[in-house]
Image (cartoon, rainbow, N blue to C red; front, side, top):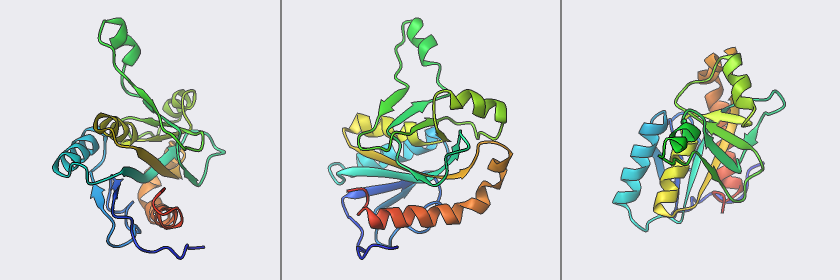
Length: 192
């Protein structure tokens, strides 16, 4: 059921890795499509925020995610994000402390693992499932950028696959996920 709210909130920046994932974002919304992966997403968001200082009160990252446990399906608002492909413990032991996890207020308790690897291997999924519920390729990078800018962020992810062979069907799941994301934005007034 759609909310009667239809006008976009103009001080919230919606960030998506792909235009397909943002296909059902309400018209007139401040939207940034970054490209896939940590480097592209962090670079695009940093440039955008630097070019528009003070313009936004919050960033909302929308997109798809692989589920690391079979009971996960639907839409999630993670409470924590971890960067799974960074050797933070080893780098810290060498004297170079690196942060690889962030808490996100007002989440639903799920943990999102972010890395530049498209996870479609059951062994890798099993390893990641020890630390997280979901996996994506941009969330932690965007949270890191927002922390640097002192800007709150909310991550909103729809399960598109189970981070196994089903991940190769990701393109066919995007439109349904994008509809769920658009409905969430409308129903929650952009997470306000």
